[in-house]
Image (cartoon, rainbow, N blue to C red; front, top):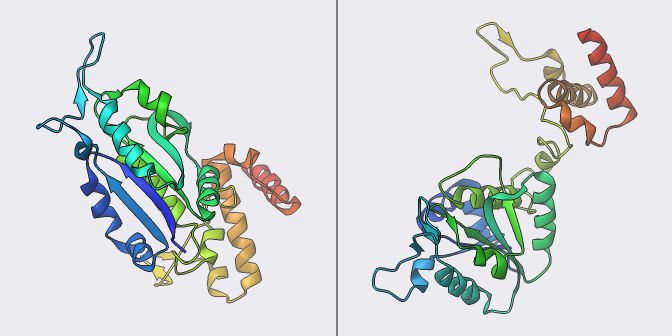
Length: 252
């Protein structure tokens, strides 16, 4: 069975080749757990200059990506008959988060489904791309990038981590930031002391039950301090709420 499949429409395919050729994602591709196909709209132009942009109607600064090359590229990708969810990466889209990553991972877990990501560039993309080709629009944050390539890589990376077999330690997924709905706990490794900074004794005790309690408490403490908004949506136990009340009381 083919791994999670992604199709990318971008005028800078080298960006993907560089990132996907390294580390965990490269191993996932080699194992067949991840499949990424990159298409350049310039290959679907009809003029000798391979033009993919033009001046905006109505005037204004910058250039706008043309619909024709993108339309041809998307239709070529879809010509194999496989079901695809087509996503435009844009600051105007819904904000990407762990919940969305898990939803897209679930979509890709079904046989013969792929995700098609369109990366915009320049001042923008012809509105008719949105109107005729796109199922969803996604933003990775409230800021503007020079193009959608980094956003597409963020999505691929975050989904790939959820695919069984991609990470060496599957248990680590369950304990990462946002998987619990809260931030991650502090991590330590050797040496046990460095320039007077010591690893907490509980982590050296070998008592797994106490270690688990400490990690949960510290994760809640960190979230309460840095991202208290997450606690409103997190699935908290009675013990978690007791920890929050204690931590809040100690701050007063």
